[in-house]
Image: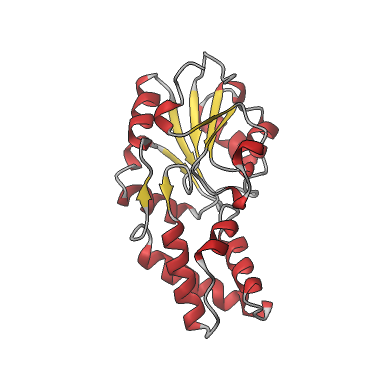
Length: 220
């Protein structure tokens, strides 16, 4: 793994990296589609839709069941209500996450969480899973003009952290994270247990892959 030895900080993704939130997404979409009298979207399909923000998830779910795209605004409003109500209930922190975050902090790295999930939902989820204390900075998909895979969220977060992109490690689970990191000039390591839109994660251009966040700082 070709990660620089003089890292200053780490930016960590949320869904699929820190917390398995697929159950939350499925529960929220089930409630939305029931409210709109639409067919439910199977879990296997939802897994391929997550990672690009709530807008993409909702539009993809509507398209999957052949719904009129004009339902989007109603679906969006319903999703905000239902997701807020269940946020974290069907989610679990991945094994090794707390150990990995402890190691990163112990190595003196400043940490930030950057996700395409709305910031308020991200903060609530981190708090619910007792992870908020690791992240003085949390930026969601509504924090900047562009979302990952655009580099803007990473570059703005590096500025907020006071770290150089080349010395700021991106930890994620998908091609979105890797593409944002490459464009921003950050080294990137991906976990092998996340979502990645249903595609093999090891096919993504990254500097390394780990089966657990606890392994990130191990020599390779």
